[in-house]
Image 1: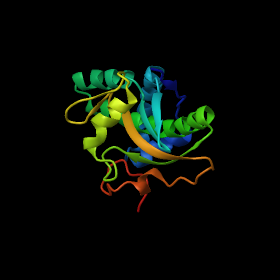
Image 2: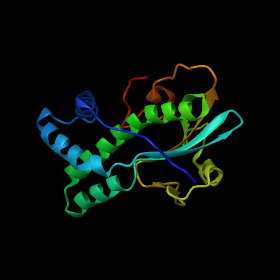
Image 3: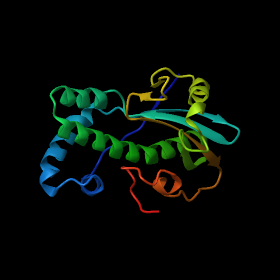
Image 4: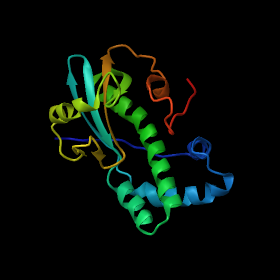
Length: 186
């Protein structure tokens, strides 16, 4: 079983977007940058995939380092820092998607279409165990409540195409209009 590594990092624009997206103050920026520097060496972004009938199933994760750092702050009762780590993880996962698409294209010659995440009405949570068996890996796990561990892990399906496809904004494809992580207005 082989996992592909994905390089992810956040630049100044990403950090500014994080501040806006999660309603931090500009005063929080020093803490965010400091925590990012503490978090970054612990991020080990990976993905594994299986191709089936013109579609690709992908499981991806940022690794256990984010969980352990976030848990250390929670144990100290520092909810603000734990929340910042969570937000940084979401931003890093967002950045990983482009790297995953690029690497899949390098490996297969195919282009990845719009993602359908497990939990979407087109790919209900109940399909998760079957997809996990199909992927056949053991690094990223799913419990009986359909929660993936490590926490910053995702499972999705996408169509593959020989031609480059225009991908929709991730949030515009999602039906959860009240999501706290929503980056666009639909």
